[in-house]
Amino acid sequence: MNVDVSDAALRTLAEQVGHNAQANHQTLVTAESCTGGWIAKTLTDIAGSSSWFECGMAAYSYEAKQALLGVRPQTLEEHGAVSRDTVIEMVSGALVHSGATVGVAVTGIAGPGGGTDDKPVGTVWIAWKKRGGYPTAVVFHFDGDREAVRRQTVAAALHGLLDLMN
Image 1 (cartoon, rainbow, N blue to C red):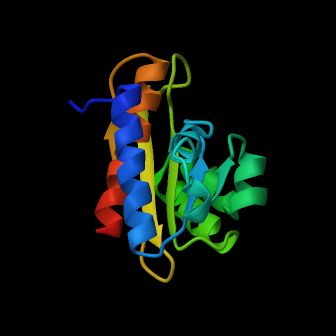
Image 2 (cartoon, rainbow, N blue to C red; image 1 turned 90 degrees about the horizontal axis):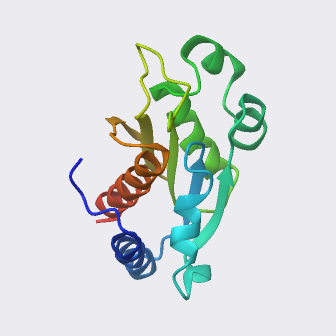
């Protein structure tokens, strides 16, 4: 992914997301694993975000994914935390457990450890969903160190929100 992921670029993306959310009377929720709340932080860095940002949930452990987002234990056992099934349940659960109208969820392996042959470091699943709609989930394979993978994840999540809201 050859996208600008600087602080300034992420801020510009967050401003665009906020503008679209406000213009379309939408509110946002984030469900984050590998980014640990970075998407929510980027969005809430924007002045006035309280009018369109509902809440963010950082859920790293299996237990937190189940308790906060309603991810089924069977999903985690069968597919693991970094999977299409898990990220779809995360975004759906975030919408169920909030008043938001649009959600984004991320789960991945930022590194430096934790990768496998099937799921190497840099593997990230992102899902987006509108309340009452069907989720979209995409797998990404980002390059770089832990921060680079996380930055690219934040950028991809925000780009996806823009696409969903337009």
